[in-house]
Length: 155
Image 1 (cartoon, rainbow, N blue to C red):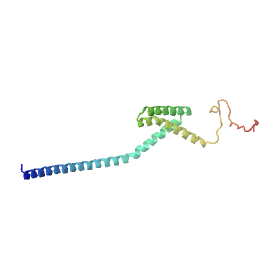
Image 2 (image 1 turned 45 degrees about the horizontal axis):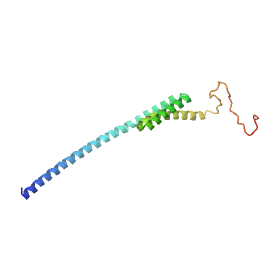
Image 3 (image 1 turned 180 degrees about the vertical axis):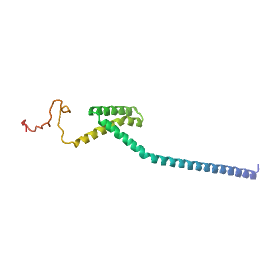
Image 4 (image 1 turned 120 degrees about the horizontal axis):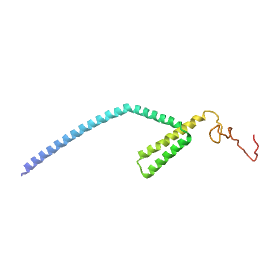
C-alpha cells in the first residue's frame, strides 16, 4: 500500500466516522427535543391537577381532625403515644424515612386535634374545676382556693 492509498483510506474512514457522529448527534438532539416536549406536557398536566389534589388532601386532613376531636383525651393520648412508639421503633430499626413518617402521622393528627380542642375551649368563659375532670360525679364544683402564708382562714 502506498502513502497516497493510505491517505485516501484514512480520509474515507474519517468521513465515515464524521458522518456517523453527525447522524448520532442529530438523533440525540431529536430524542432530547421529544423528551423535553413530553416533560412539558407532563408538567402542564400536573400543574392543572395539583390544586385539586391539594384541596382533596386538605379536606381529608380536616375530616380526620374533626373525627379525632370527637375522641376523648385519654384515647387521643394513647393514639399519639402508640404512633410515637411505632415511629421511634421503625427509626431505630433503620426503616425507610417515608415508612417512619407514615407511622408518625397519626401522632401529628392527634396532637393537632388536642391542640385545636384546647384552643376552642379557651374562649368559652370560666370553667369550673373538678377533681375527676367531669362535673356531676362528686367532688368540688368551684375553683380551688389558694392558701398563702401560715394562715389557713378561708377568704
